[in-house]
Length: 135
Length: 60
Image (cartoon, rainbow over all chains, first blue to last red; front, side, top):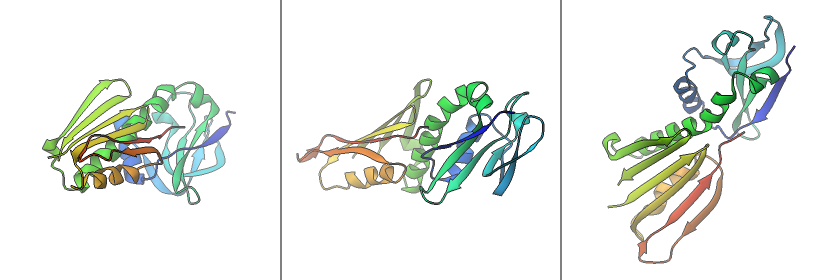
């Protein structure tokens, strides 16, 4: 049985986090309050989360993955099994921070009233994005 | 006219605004401030505000 490990992140916004997860390829995401996480064998675990990706969408031998809001830090924590951290999720764990940040910046610019045509997003390399704005 | 350049690498955001001093450059950096935890912010004293940088980290 692979143990779940909880790690702090700096993801503050639920909507942005969900959009970033979709961008990373997870189209089926469960939202709720204290949603139960399940292990590889379908075993119910004590850990719960607010945003959940079920194991079948991660990998054949995976466990569920979750994000839980921490009211003290005002950020989401990632709850991920030791197995998935070492196997299926490596690429995803590297991609999510840049994807989240890119989406968060773009949404902030749009909220500020900047037209999307004035925002130029260039993906320079894997995990390397440049946004240019004429204000 | 102001120019804002934002580089995002491995979840670290670095924002840079160029524009006339006193013409609201800071508000765009304040906007980035709210997204994470600011590690560094610098501002020039010149009339033409050449460089303002914020570095943030979003990582595990």
